[in-house]
Length: 427
Image 1 (cartoon, rainbow, N blue to C red):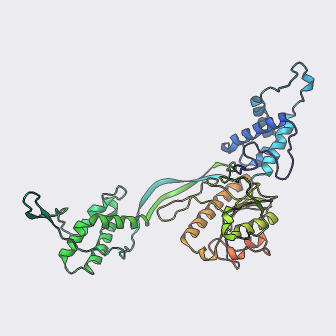
Image 2 (cartoon, one colour):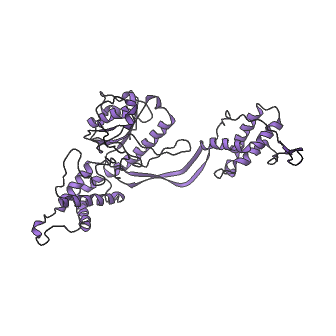
Image 3 (tube, rainbow, N blue to C red):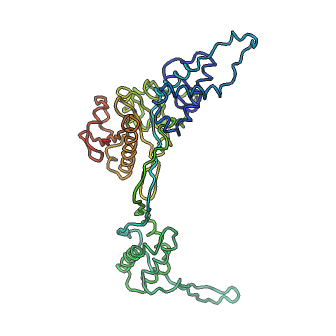
């Protein structure tokens, strides 16, 4: 078996657990073209703000016209007998394909937050961590020996130049970094350099030794300080504009593969070896938008059992589905939520985490990014009469069979733990 894709990707145009809704090769050929035309409407947010718009008769008629232009003439082994060529009911094919597309996917908008007005950036003041630097003075002299007569001689190491203030050694090395602007950051640079000088004075015996270290190790000191500065970088704008670039996006292909002879396990069965669960493939779903799924933990498998029971449809998104990023220090990694689900009243972005990780910087950063995305998506949903989005962060020890999905939706605003160890965004 090869890569596992979406039920609506490639040539797979069949509902999960059902036979094909297209009975002839001609219908299947037209249905593939319908899907291609539907994909072109992703960027036409005015005409199709959500896939629900495809259910309208007027838009279906335009889709049929576009398919008719792309559809090649019917092929038959008896070209002279046109009566043997079954007539294609293109409107019916469009209607069935559209209904299936709406039923077997979840609308995920593409949202961009764009800064407007003046954008400022810099580094926030902070206390320098000097615990990793315990530098010692170095002898500036080098002893050599003449190869001809074996006489020894001494060379003095050249200094980088004597600075009037001890802090200048460090500041002059820091401003060599391209993203440090001396004109706006001079106060912070001298504050950090002063902290380093004070640290050196705390264990070196005199000023000459301090100057020696600053002179000969200035680059090492500057590199250490710069690395810490990056953790306190900020960028802000006077205001931000939220732009919905697409009202919906196609589901991404799953990137994992199923090897020949590999067992596909039923998602309801607890694996014997939980340590190998990431290498296992699970199937047997009726409400998942992918026929097969992988889980990073048994908690995820248990949550899938819950979603199969309580959600209308769900899936585990692939990388790039949301193009959502979170800030962790100076890095902005991509955030791929554990689950996306749709119920009668809500769309849900869900994350399950170990109880011990719930307060970590990374989990909080992901949750803040996810909750903010859900807010923007909900604001957009109000303009299209679509369902609002909610973000759920759920501790692993409350994912149990006796819980219902509604239990995780009853708690307060995101940022406060509920009775079951759940954080939820009420947007």
